Amino acid sequence: MLVRVIQKCFVNNVLREAGVEFEYDGEINPNVMISLEDEAPVNKPVAKVAKKAAKKTEKIATKKD
Image (cartoon, rainbow, N blue to C red; front, side, top):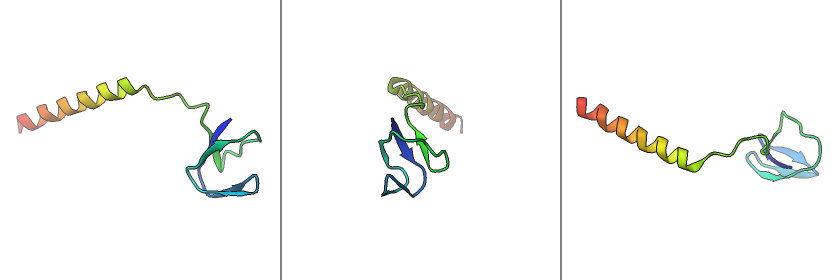
């Protein structure tokens, strides 16, 4: 399973820096790593729509001032 280290630690006798992602088949220690397979993927088109909506809101707010 794909995991991400959330703090510097040793995993499988290798020092892993925070933020490193790698495949791991052992038991996950929630204090030092999280499973990425449990996270839902971000839908990129939705992010684009939200960004455009934020820009429109920003333009409207600056016109009122």
